[in-house]
Length: 341
Image (cartoon, rainbow, N blue to C red):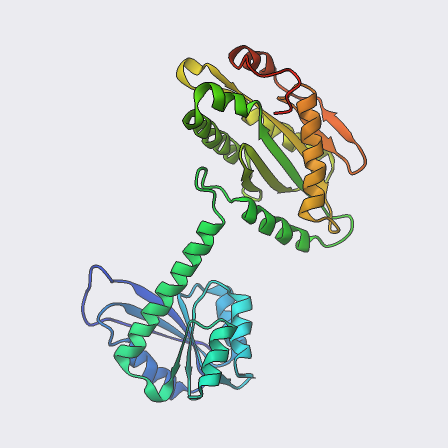
């Protein structure tokens, strides 16, 4: 069974005070106890160490508990070498891995780092302060990498996922589809006459409209949905469906949530148009988006502030819509009637 030890720190540091939850993958109990003792001497943090005596036990612990760091020995009874790093990285990609090994060869250290380890320390060179410091640095480095990754997937204006995040979420959903009949939905949402809003009221006001539409869409979305800003005034929503009829209902729900007045004296009347389609296992983001975008364009052609569905063969109007277009035309008079925006 995994063994756990809670080791108190010797002093209290307000700026660095923290408890680090460590999974120590080591089959030798004496070495595990020695390392726990050295970590317990750190003046900067407390540690809670869970020992796993094999790679299989480590994976089981990772499945049920949250850890800040994995201390990994490369000579395990059920796995020898850097393959263990790859296995843990594939299982828990966000957890930093720190190698403690009896192998001093530089080639092994390089291979471990290339496999995804944050640091490599030969056991022969292990000193308590060095181990504690490298532990902190490994965690801090991984957090910076994770934050940088999150920033690269986040739209700065709305704090929604960006287009890259949408691509990733789409592929994750697609790979989870079990058979040819399984599907999920994709809605493309576009703010009506947004260029005219920018031209008449300025880009700052336009940014506020984008932020408010993002908030309205967020409130109208379920937890199981993925909402992203695709770019400009366009958003995408991915959601699970079991029936094609759900596509129309969800598109109408999103469209209705974004019909509101905005700005000084509520002069700016905001609406959106939507295009929706079902996504199957043989789709790519490009093919599915092309169908949803064609449905969106059909909605624009019908007068905006409405939704259309692409069933894979043809486009059909969704009849539930609001009466905002006439109000928009009053307050955005410079827009041509045949404008697709």
